[in-house]
Amino acid sequence: MLTGKQRSFLKGLAMKLEPAVFIGKAELTDNVLTEIDNYLTAHELIKVKIQEGSELEPKEAANQAAQKLGAEYVQAIGRRFVLYRASEEKKIQLPR
View (cartoon, rainbow, N blue to C red):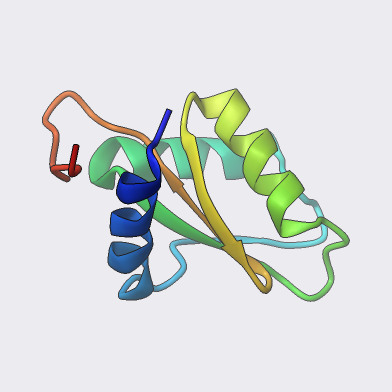
């Protein structure tokens, strides 16, 4: 579980990120979840964009993906959301 301070830190890092995965009309498919999982394994922090054609709500999609992938929900703004999952190598040092 992320603390408020850690969540704020991750939001700051996420501001500089471009979306790495795009969700379209097919919504949260196994392929989309696999791509998010692979990216989180490599980078720990991901920004995902939901395309205009999709009827998914960003916060709901983020929480579903986080639950299925063992990740933490960081934020959802507009049609984008951010997830975090620590890897074994700890690329991002979170504040305490």
